[in-house]
Length: 331
Image 1 (cartoon, rainbow, N blue to C red):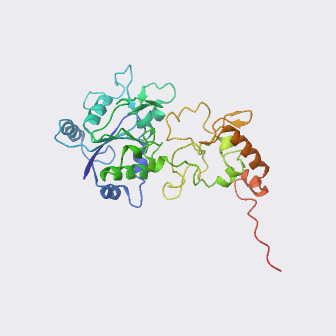
Image 2 (cartoon, helix red, strand yellow):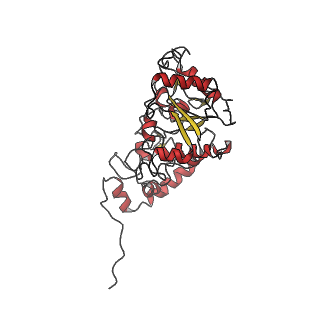
Image 3 (cartoon, rainbow, N blue to C red):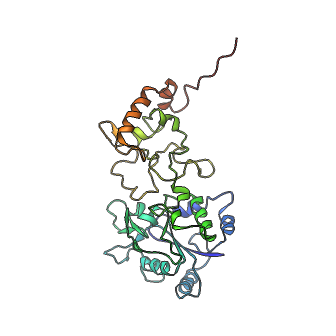
């Protein structure tokens, strides 16, 4: 069995809550199937504070082997680099120092969620707590551990990014680690496991027919594509949300919410409202991944000219008002 220690710093705990939604199988069965044993988790463990501190001492002095360290939430380094904004209760030490010490003895380090990976929502606004990620500060490699950090098994920090994570993104990663099947080439350039980051949220989106014809929604309750007017970044977001559905059937887009690209560094500061699409001369600034601007403009013009009346009407309605045509009965 691989031992796992889960600690939290600057975050909301939402990734732990999302992990509890694992199903088919449930979380505990999935961990057992992966061959992972939780040494301690702040929401799942019954151990007292004293018992937790004793465990930390055993891990840090080498009496207890630590295979996997998971951090949830950003690393709080403020004020002025002291980390005093977040000290571990009962220890008097800044959490950032404890995280660094644990990372030095762990076989593998995982950043759980975009806060731990890149700073995330905790680093939003003026970033008053000086929040950073484990190996990134926003989109810049570095973070708490430094860009050159490698865990004992030779891998960099694995960034299971997301706000929150999909339970299976982490459980699949743990399973690969436990079996020794996760290699450096299985991570994308931002340290995200390719098993979920090599797809886009756009793939499998139920609004794809509207996207193809640029039949766009004008308000949040409309059925049309959310890219042109309502800020959707699904064509740029590296995640398989519409292929690997949440709770078996959901995703942000299926719920009517524009994708905000929450698996990316600095997604929390797009420079405009999440539900607005910035444009220049009527053309969205953020174009689909790999799509040259001239091609997008040309294809969008052709698509709009060819939009079926059915899609044009349904795109700005909250339910289907024009069903697909059916073949006429033979006389």
